[in-house]
Image (tube, rainbow, N blue to C red):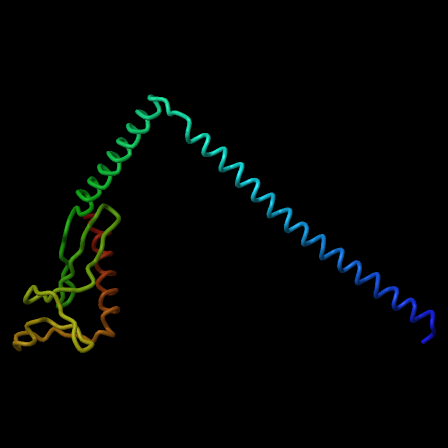
Length: 172
């Protein structure tokens, strides 16, 4: 390499290192200035808010807020009270096969089918043990209603399907 190229390379290194230092300095200065700006904004906001909060409240505003709070509480209570009274309109039982299903009819197009059926013969809710659903009378050898737990979803969905069909056709 010639002497001119070496001088040019040194000169470029010096310029780029200086430029790098200037850029980093500007970034650092911007960060410090922005932090100061955020601090000034927060301080001025706090001063304005404390000044506003220390102003005397007119009597009519206090009375209006108390009345508004009372109305809100009244509306919340009446809404929850009316929902608790009208939540259950009817309870019906549907027989499908050897099982009886409890259905809670809330209103025209909404009902819930209880996931645990009842034994049709003994009118007892089925129990779950050892991956099986069975009538409590099975233990006394008075009943043979029993099915594996893995079939529960299929039995439940089948019952829901029949109950939906019956409710649509009868318009309970």
